[in-house]
Image (cartoon, rainbow, N blue to C red; front, side, top):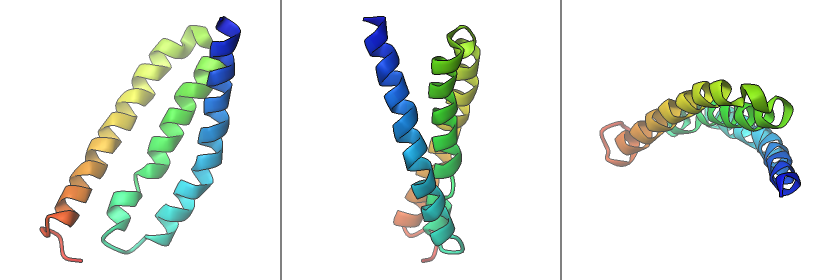
Length: 95
């Protein structure tokens, strides 16, 4: 069973690595627009989750501390993204 878990973690690293260029292109493409504030944090969020998954694959013993640090960063950035989306979609920020 642990081999299956490791296989899924490796798959997670591969998928997040493939997603990272798309988030970078989206953040760069929407730069300077009001929607850019919503898309901009997607790059560090993806990097944080990639770091969590890669740490669990490479060094499972150090995964707890790294997971907490990167997880906290990702959650804070997601809250910021949600706040920016709410401000944009509610009309409190001009399009």
